[in-house]
Image (cartoon, rainbow, N blue to C red; front, side, top):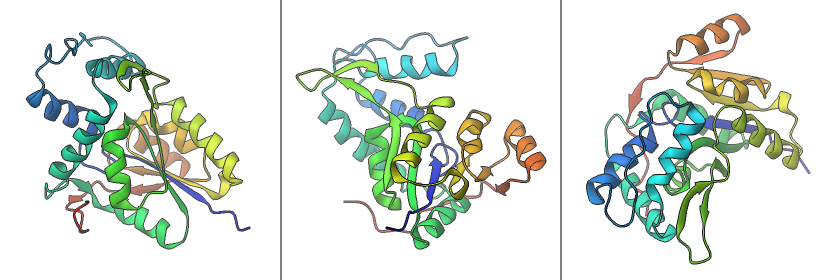
Length: 225
């Protein structure tokens, strides 16, 4: 059986123009102001590291039925994708090129599954590696997560997937926009830096990585169901 190379794509500000977690939180809070529906007030986040910020974010959804968040994610994405500058076109073009070559396309993000699933379907991604929210026996979100899918977490998850797929890291690709994506980018043979993050750009220049601009535009595909 032919082994497919894997192309890993960070999502926020790599494929989409913005941070999906924050955009979705604002959309959700407009319908469910903090303190309502059993959801705790947002935790003060000043001075916390990215892992703590990630965990604090998910506590916002404590007590929410998982199916309700799934529905909300689809509705948010339907609204988001209508923005004429919603997507980072060079990265989307790269993703489509990988699909055309028969590569496995994987989204890797600290964001939540309900927001990423409709995006993955829209783009034709094969897999999603993201932060996993804990759900209790009644299908309600506990507010806790298994592990933040950021930094080294992305690289670890990518390594597990490549090993399971029998893919050599040297034959695989990764795209990211921020210095926190460096562990993921270094885990493959062909990394690509998207946008203008100075730390990431420095590595890209020094190590002769592919660089993509962050030009934005619409996604020219039929609207998702």
